[in-house]
Length: 96
Image 1 (cartoon, rainbow, N blue to C red):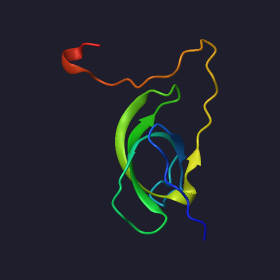
Image 2 (cartoon, rainbow, N blue to C red; image 1 turned 90 degrees about the vertical axis):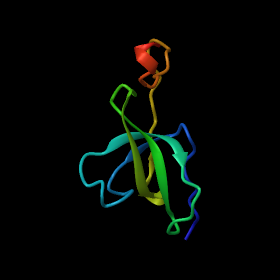
Image 3 (cartoon, rainbow, N blue to C red; image 1 turned 90 degrees about the horizontal axis):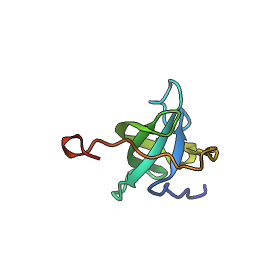
Image 4 (spheres, helix red, strand yellow; image 1 turned 120 degrees about the vertical axis):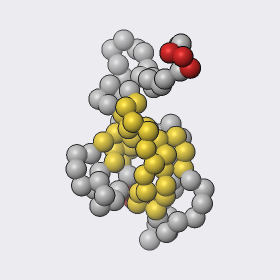
């Protein structure tokens, strides 16, 4: 069995049933914030990140336990405006 490397922070992934049986519903797009360094079962990892909507905006922060071979990289097409998608994160007292 080949060792699969965990994703890196900033990487966007499609999370599906292939990553774990807990994801039996519709697939979702996930941007990795961090990978827990603590050992787990071989080939599995805890990921912290954001669930993204269709525009690439963060809508929920989650921690998920996934099988690394089941992760699918997302390929984002360039936008016509040339602007990158950004995370819509709340700031102190509503300031930006």
